[in-house]
Length: 206
Image (cartoon, rainbow, N blue to C red; front, side, top):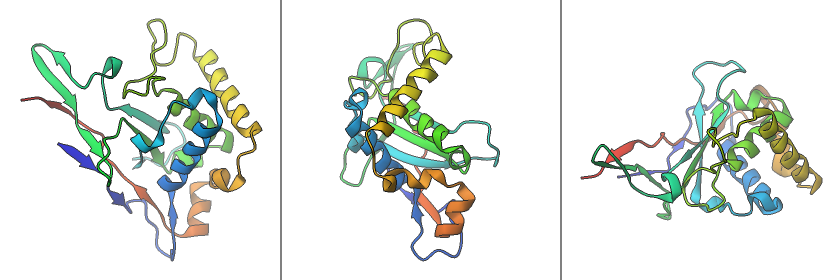
C-alpha cells in the first residue's frame, strides 16, 4: 500500500492571490545544500519526500523537523520480529518513484526560529540520511548511533556545515524566506501551503 503525495492547504490563510509554497521552497533549498556540500552529495532529493505538519501548539519549543527513514537497518525493506515480517508503508510521488525518506517540518514552529537555527535544523535532518542513501539512517559508532555520544560535538559539526554552505555564496533567493517569521510570510504572501504527507505506518506482510 502506497501513500501518494497530497497537496494540503491546512495552514492556508485568506487574502492570497499566488500564495507561498513552503515545501517547494524548502525542497529547492535542500537541493542547493546537497549540490554545494560534499558531505551531503550522496543525497538525491528526487527520492526524499518533503512535507509539513501543523504543530498542535503555537510555541517555540518542541519538535521543529523530523526525518523518517523508509527502510530498516542496512536498507532492508523487511523487518522480521517475533516471527512476523513488517514493511514501512510506501510513499510514491506523482511519477511513481518510491521515496526513501520523508523530511517533515512543523509549522508555524519551524518558521518562527531564528534564521541560523532554521539552517541548523535543515542540515541536522539531512545529515541523518545514510551515506549509502539506502533508506536507512546514518549510523554513528556507539550506543547513541543517531546523534553520537556528544550532543555538543554533533551540534558543532552541524554548525560547520552551515558555515561551509553559506561561504559558497548560495543565492539569497534560495534562503531569503527563512529570514521571515510565519507571521511575516503570512503578511507578505497571504497563503502558506505545501505538501502534507501522513507519517507512514508499519504494515505486516501477508
